[in-house]
Image (cartoon, rainbow, N blue to C red; front, side):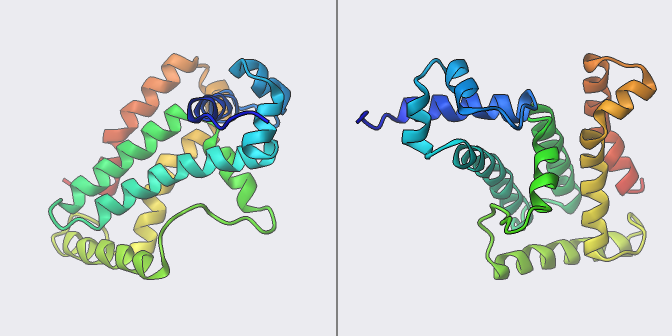
Length: 201
C-alpha cells in the first residue's frame, strides 16, 4: 500500500481541477487524469476512491475559496457597500476566468437529485450576511444610488451580470466573431461596466 503523500494528493487535485474546470473535460476518466499528473491510476483510487469523489473534492475546494471571500467581505463593517460589491464582482469574474467551466458544472450538479452545495455557512450566518447587505442597500437606495429593490433582487442582479457571460461564452464568441483573447478582454472590461449598471453616479 502506498504511503500518503500530501504533495502527490495536491498534484492529483490540481491536475483534475485543470482538466475539469479549465479545459472543460467534465467526464475525464481517472486514467486521463493520472496520465496528465504523471502518476499511477491506482493512486487516484487510493486517495479519492474514484473519479466522482475526486471531482467533488476539487469542486468543493474551489467553491470554499469563494465562500470564505464572500464571508470576509459582507461580514465586514469597515468596507463601504460599493467597495464590497466591487471586490465581489472582481473575485467572481477572476474565478470565472481561472475556471471557465466551473459555472457550467455547478448548474448541471444543482439539478441533480441529492446535490448539496459545498459551503460552510450556517443558516444564522447566511441570515446575517443577507441582513448586512439589506442594511447597506437601503442606504444606497435612500441616497438615490440604486433603484428601489430587495436585497435578494440586488444579489440576483449582481450574480447574473457576472455569471451569464461565462455560461454563454461559446454563443457570444460565435455571434460576435471574436477569439478567446478578445473575449477575455471583454470580460475584464465588464468589472467596471457592472458597477456602472448596479450603481448610479
